[in-house]
Image 1 (tube, rainbow, N blue to C red):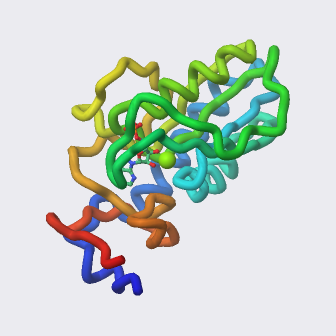
Image 2: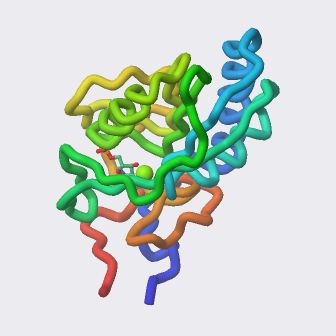
Image 3: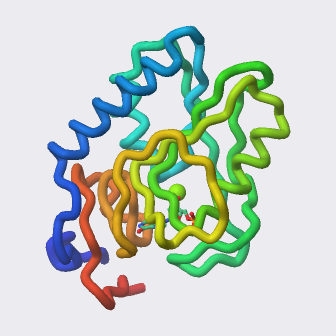
Length: 186
Ligand code: IMP
Ligand code: MG
């Protein structure tokens, strides 16, 4: 059984109010940048971007549609990602000659996104940009063009607001740091 989040929370990194304020700013920035293009496809990477997507889209004033992509890293450890990804669920929409904005929860090594970008670029969108809520910049192993960043965060394992620990705690309205050395029971 998962323990109450209070038992694994070291400290709150970004509280709900700060998250919402920044997401409002990102929405305004995106609305401004895409003003001339009256159509965007927002592609959320499941499952972590779920909460971010639903809050962000409320602040995007340009007409847009949403779709979701679910990928997994091959042979990854629980908290690490490897070079190649496998599609678990593809998007339904055709993105050729359309403006695509990827909505991601967090960029760590950058390897997942590198593959996702390659995959989507091959489908010839009119433009392809990246919006991530969190960026652990110091962990980056590959160069990723990031167009919109909510917060740059230190190298710590975080959870809440879409991000999970072994699939739990995604519902929390804030981003918390896991206590050092915490491992969930089987
Ligand atoms: P990357 O391929 O190393 O950039 O890994 C990105 C993915 O790893 C994210 O989409 C998350 O699913 C997961 N991830 C990386 N860091 C964290 C974290 O601190 N908490 C929860 N998930 C994380
Ligand atoms: Mg993810």
